[in-house]
Image (cartoon, rainbow over all chains, first blue to last red):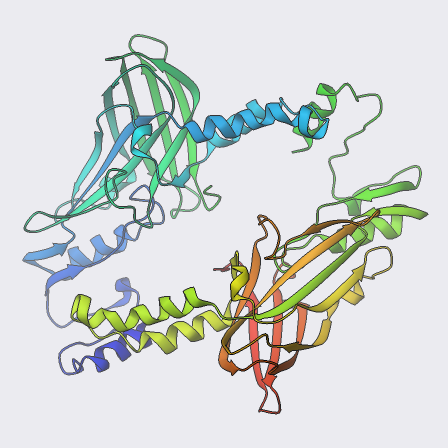
Length: 254
Length: 254
């Protein structure tokens, strides 16, 4: 990668202005402080396999006091969804008896349990979304600390558009640059390779117009592999009982 | 998985006829020989991450002399392709100067080199295929041995349909059951989750009608991880010089 970057520098006759250093940022020594740090560190659900810790290390060590961070802000959002495709795929198990002469209805709760433990990376159709978005976190990349990332936790409150069957929540992120330039991975914008992250609920929620879904979400690096994320989702409708769901974002992403 | 299989057995009231054993086949002891072994062991390019070795172990230990293997035969095929999508994606690098004011033409040979070292799992459109298929291997699963799988090697000879620019070869497989029932992963059949395997050539070949592409392909389990495959592809057009290409099928499949 570094060798190829050098080739691109040469190709643009910038060899006298750009120096490519092939090293972990944690192992670099520079003779002067820098004006700007540009890094594409974002992962699925913003923080999965994210390189943000290394970027913050570089910021604290190398960035001038009024230097720029590109991007300078990152925000994560959540909204409830009715995933019709998921419903159809589950219902398929009801057709096995007719198609293959083997009853496989018991696969439905099994598949639901598997889906609720994991995260699906997919582009969510806009019509699946059942409320306005709610902000989970907003990171000011000029000031956020590595320890802030160890436990991101927030409560959410989502007021449903209308009658629906909520079987998941979707998250997406935006990152911002100066002059209000925004890179958005929202389902309302053109799709990106990050798509969106869908968390299928272990407990479905039937809602009416203005039903409130309240809860909390916490996101932590997994204690064994910090590339992975432990997500805890707690949710309830109106004054009903709360459901607690533990999700692991590991390399078995669906 | 075994627990869920038991649930399906119960659901079909077959608990008195079917016993589910949750074990590696290498660790099972049975009191009698079996009439049939049914196993879906096939991987990408037939043998990638394949469980065939375990199936052959079970066959040699447990199958009655005239017992059935389901499937009983597996065949792997190869054909040359002109991958237009690949050409378009490479050409995109020529547009970077106009789009982003950075010349990135040097990415083209770099991308080609990366692509030629790896395998792309994708559904190949029929019109990309530039000759009739050629059989790489045909395994009789009643008699093939584990040592036969350690080095599958064959020569191929492919006579091109017409003028074209060959930038890859595609492989696919079929498996057969008694009564001529065939599961095919051919690009001419309905697509399956195995899709096809595309090996992009490091040396492109311009061909005319009846140009002959001759060569050999060898497929071996990787010496470090036997889930992976080492593939060596040698090819030449007519009487031109042979190109040798080493490909690793590891978990970085594209």
